Length: 346
Image (cartoon, rainbow, N blue to C red):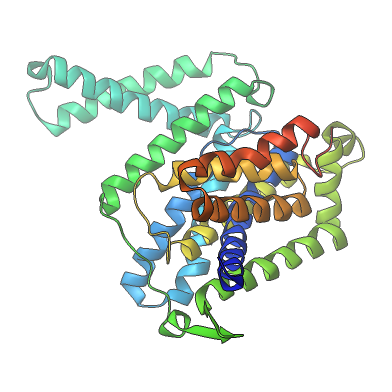
């Protein structure tokens, strides 16, 4: 193992860490601000890649796919957060969506168990679904439930349910084949530094992560919105007491987290590929980044992403049979020394 080996492996680890920063920073902020255990965060990464593939197929523009995919998944994240991860507001619409979904499931079950009741016709099926939806909606409207913000178990069950729903939806729409996002030809070249060939696309990934990290830092440290976010991370109840709209802050952070994860899906799709199951492969890595860096800290997310990226790359290169151990060893060490993470708050 010469010097070139160590340089290349370090470069690859840093570039992979840059990708993990995109998905991990958003998850860290969601954790820190909303205290929501969002197990559907990896799905935003996967869906961002799939939406980008559709945009590229329709327009032929890779550059256009970046903002379109990120904004589309950010809108999906807002809808999920407003309707299902918040107890106040939109109760009527939330109950209507739940009633419609449950009514379809009930109708499908009845049609499968007793097909003679519906006669195989779509009209009968729609009538049955409509009646069931009205009854379920009335029932849901009369049920009083505890706020989901206070129940971690419900957060886990709800978000993992969304993760499976998104995965199945992606499978139905885009199929189960492995797909690759093709970047512009200029990014398929390599640059030579000291006699070492470095893929230009990985340089782009590092540069993109640096730019996004600097912009996020400026927003969080130099703007009123950033001050509101930091206050909400430190003490949400006190922030509400001084007039900060923590609901608006939560929506902004959730949309930002989904935006960054989807952007990572587009960028990462060029060398990871896009395929069913990628969401659950990226999710543990994102949580490792958050655990190492600490909730709500962008600097912690950057350090955590770098640590995970380097540990993953060097582990696979030096100890492939123990690669999972070397990947999660930094996380275990940090948990043992500082359970809140390097830059986390109590």
